[in-house]
Structures are given as structure tokens and as C-alpha cells.
Image 1: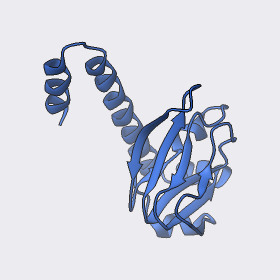
Image 2 (image 1 turned 90 degrees about the vertical axis):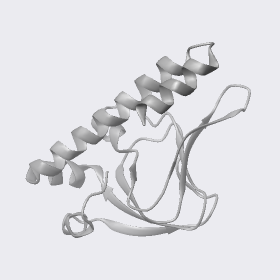
Image 3 (image 1 turned 120 degrees about the vertical axis):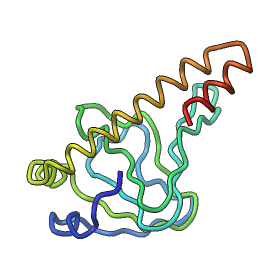
Length: 144
């Protein structure tokens, strides 16, 4: 999702720079902001009980992250880490909700984006659960 930076600024967003390898948020933190990448690359990950890393996504310019968690009263189940030096727009949760109320088209676009992400994850889970490598690859190619 990419929200117009002018709209984000009009609701009080701030821009912050992060160094490579710096945590933007950690698993277990409470969601407090909408995040949108101006420049740089961000890794969304978590670690299992054995310390093995699972990378959920690598995001770059104009992509947002962490936004689904702004709609539920849960902590982050993942980390967001700057892979490269990053500039990120942050909009506090309450201002983000106010923005969505004032810009219903943006709210609709966010719902569409979240629905697309959920669909992708469901398709990937179905395909990855197969023991047949051909089914896995074909499922991925069919999606794209």
C-alpha cells in the first residue's frame, strides 16, 4: 500500500532515518504507527524457538508494513529491520485511523491491499503444504 505523502503529512506524520540492521519494531511490541518506506529496504522476519530466521517479506520504496496490526489489539508477531539505510514515514495509529475515516477511498484501497496479502498467504500455504515440488512451483507460477 502506498498512501500519498502529502496526505500523511497533513495528518501529522514524521519522517525518520534508520541505519542498516536497526530495528524499526520488534516482535512483541505494541503497534503504534503506520510505516511507509520513502527509501531503502526493510526485512520483515521472526525467529523460531531454535533461533532459525523466517523471512516473511523484503520491502522497498513506497511500500507499507505493519499496518494490519493497527486494526487488532495484538502485539507484533514479527520484526521489521532496516536492511539498508532507510527513510521511513511514521504516522501514529490514532492519526492513521482518523485519516482513513476522512479518506474513505484510501480506506477501501487499504482493504483491497490487505485482502490481496491474505489471498497470497493462503495460496502460498496451500502450495507449500504439498510434498510434490511440481505442485509447489506450479502453484506459485499460477498465482503470478
